[in-house]
Image (cartoon, rainbow, N blue to C red; front, side):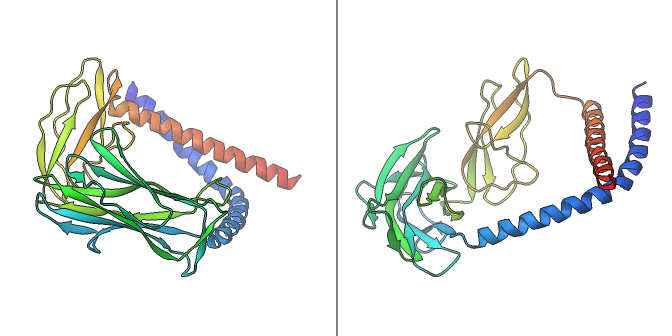
Length: 301
């Protein structure tokens, strides 16, 4: 019965696709013309906007090999990337995140440009953030296109694997504070060894053993843990369970913890997923065809 239903839906979908295909060119031509104009306007506006690079380095490099107990100096440079011209700075911040299981801040080691404020705060999951921020009290200050914001030192306490010191929640603010300019980041990776420790936090499920993974290589997916009344939806790299780890594509960048993301009930079967997919396609094509018919009638009238 189920196979006959799918066959009927498939036949309907084929016929519907032919009909929709005959109608879509008219509608698409109008949409393409409008979209082209809007994209050109947006691109022109974006071309006039300042943009920046938040760059972290150790000894002028983005990857360094160290030994346990070494003290490294982390430098933060802000670079304007759209032009080699001075500009007016109103406010800036960078939250430089590091793993307290791998590093220890050297007290009093920060050296910063005039006006830069710093703070070191504990976060969740053994992470810490070294804040560097600036706010002009005189309506803006002239800054050069490349400026060393500051440096600070970390002692390497990790004995194996690697860890990345990263820029997070960084921004250069508009004058009115309503938003921020586009920016990119360059982080720095500190390597003690290429054998990285991966810890699995099952969040109420059965235990999964820690494993050692090779830096830069893919991670083998473990057997799913068990939790009564739930099924494992994904392994995530963050405690808030927003960023799923892709075992087929992602590569190990250092020591890390993966968190189990659970969903109530039982996972959907492949046949259910396939049927839902066909229904969604039909709805989308119906909406597109309806829009095309409406546009043709309006044009004829």
